[in-house]
Amino acid sequence: MLAFKAAIKNLKNSLRVQTIRHSHEGGGSGGGCKPIPQACGVCRRYVYMDPKCKIALVTGGTSGIGFAAAQELLCNGLDRVVITDMDANKGKSAVDSLNAQFGKNRACFLTLDTYEENNFYECLKTVLKIFGNVDIMVNTPGIPRNKSWQEEINAHILSTIRGTMIGTEIMSKQKLRPGGVIINVASAFAFDNYPSAPVFVSENNGIIGFSKSWGATPNYTNTKVRCVVICPAAIDGIDLRNSLGISAGEPGKDSQNTSSTRSTSTSVGRGIVYCVQHASSGTVWFVEGTGLFKAHIPDRLEYSQKIRYV
Image (cartoon, rainbow, N blue to C red; front, top):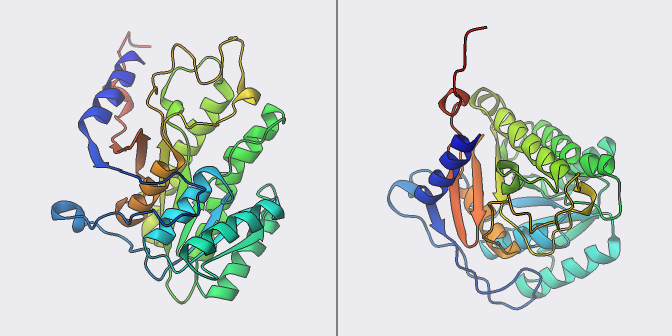
């Protein structure tokens, strides 16, 4: 385990893909966002999708990482973004903010209960009916406050899996532009020893493992829908009270948590845009501070010590 953590740390330090600089914090309505510069050299040859003229659906898009993703996609030329949440008042406020910044009718809101499979289907079909295509889907389900750990798992990992499976089914069959990309948001804490939040760690391990497998080459070849997972380090405002374990350590200040470089929602949003443009299916990405990293997860035998024959 120590060797694996050391390998991940070394990879983060050596595989910096892009430094993300931001001029505003997500949630503001000012016009200060800056499009990500065009990649050059090797990176330019691997552009999978230009957000320009595309349609995006962002679950949990009324605040935090979801709102920042919507904002940064619009900043980089996205045609329309549909944000979802359970709270219609928050949805109206977020849509008003995005439309004030980027122009009338660039953003709209749909109520979505990510616990309900049929609700997910209806949401995606509504977007398809109105706009003709769903090119980008960003799953940012978040962590419910004042809920049990069982409800947290349902809201976080099950909602992500549910959205990815339904999104892939619909996006792979659409007629205007078949295929697309699904970005799932997990956490870098999945790779850390975090005794005070074991449930949160396990959820994010699940999202990463699922996204890697779902996005593997055979699946992508069949569906033309990329599946990518992005893992921010500590984010200001994250609430892990439902995830507490036996340790009485304060969430976010665990002495064994190695992800000490805090990220902003805006940095994660810009990382999501980069992944839409450049990330191949099944890959794992980290955002640490304002740096975006591509992770190369080693084979299990590379970090295992053989003890004996059994």
